Length: 328
Image (cartoon, rainbow, N blue to C red; front, top):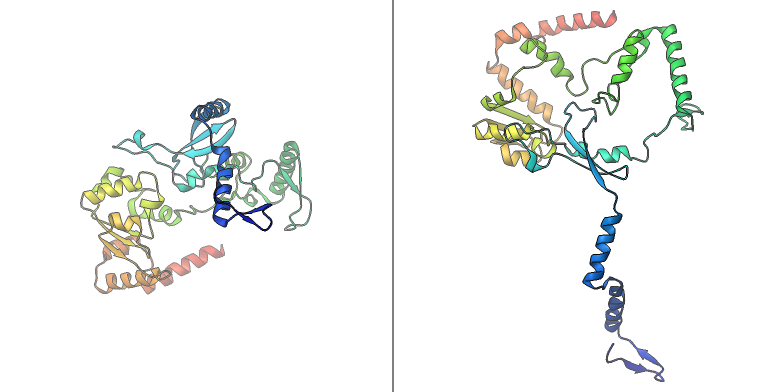
């Protein structure tokens, strides 16, 4: 330090605020000052001590049928991060299903502090939150005894497999093995259709004759109009959906995007953007149906043959049939 003035009897120097900050900064920086050779030696040592990393290719089972490409980077038995198919490995003709944000967050699911790692048995009242750890043999015996007792008393219909298990997309995890076990011991109560496409599963057989359209993805390029209602594939889906949507756009397909937010999907695809107010979707749908019916824009013959509920007579008939079935 320089230009330090004496204060009082000359025994204690007077340090200005500016000089104090300069001196403190110099002291703080000292541990980080080293020669290039020292820094290089530290880097080499850190690399040598780092456990070898291997990449395990797998897929996500987050209640999703996409089975997108995810890759677990494993070091010393620990998943350090999750990645997906890199850009330089994509096939321009048929891009693979790259993992979305949910798939790439799988590591947090694996190592979440609330995840159960061993069997726990409730020891208090239901809802009290009191559990004790038990062995796997105790757990399987307890489950088997109760399953057998309930089946003998109430029959196989008393056993239900929940559709949302968080890993229902897995072949050897989640509900697949449980369903197989229950099928081998008399059956079980099944859920109806799907939590993600229940209406589609019910409607497509009546519309197309089979459970799916059966068309190849490349036929999407012939589509004349697409309405994306609350659908934002450019930002949220990393599979090949957006690839085909962009190809359709280049081929002349018209896109209408209904979304309150000006998303990347709107900016890259929309020929018409409808920024409706949140919670007003039903009002817009009602208005569209009113125009279609009042201006006779619908296919009457198709609706008369394949749909129920357009007229009041059909509604009353459908209600009677549904009500009678419900009472059975």
